[in-house]
Image 1 (tube, helix red, strand yellow):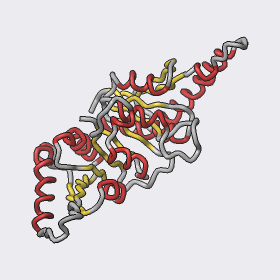
Image 2 (cartoon, rainbow, N blue to C red; image 1 turned 120 degrees about the vertical axis):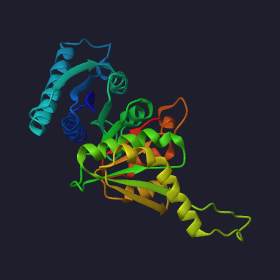
Image 3 (cartoon, rainbow, N blue to C red; image 1 turned 90 degrees about the horizontal axis):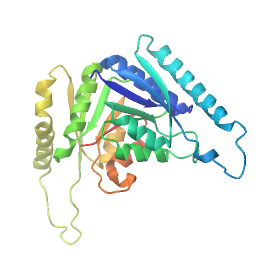
Length: 281
């Protein structure tokens, strides 16, 4: 995937981890890396008091954040094509606008503000729900690589872009791709005597996985594939497997950012310990 990867840098530990992840992915795919820091002056705009050069200090601080992030990227991938810029505006709005030109957006799971114990920041949730390109959310406490990518598969056509992204990630890394499909039998509270042939159910669920991935298996025959079909809640299945990256689709609907992420996507973002890629249809 030659093109452009945009990463948000804010000076936080998750932000630095996002820069490292984006640098590695850009090196694998031949993409250019653009490091962006959003300079939001609004919290400091107290109109009753004079500025006394405060704006210059904010710009200097933003420049230091970018310098540190650029050093992280170059230490990770010295030969990488890298560009860094300060963009004024609210972080969520800036990242959304930058993502219009990008093939991939990478962000930390939370920034410097908000509640220290929160797993996801408000900017992360908003951006993951609105951006059209794949959004990769990275935590600071990363795991050792295991050489495996996981992707969630359901019986809807909206997971197709997520499957394609996962195959490309697995191919560029030489990693195994785990096709994760979770199913649960319906509970009939008023008809408990209804029975199911579990062997037939399992066979049908494997057919769902094969049908959804047949085209990509033909395009990427070099990718080693594991079919992981479980009787479990989807979030449990997707976050339980040790992976270097978990890829999910985004099936939410609505005008609010959080509603543009489906419940499964939100659950995986909250509970996965590895980076998560959200790929909208």
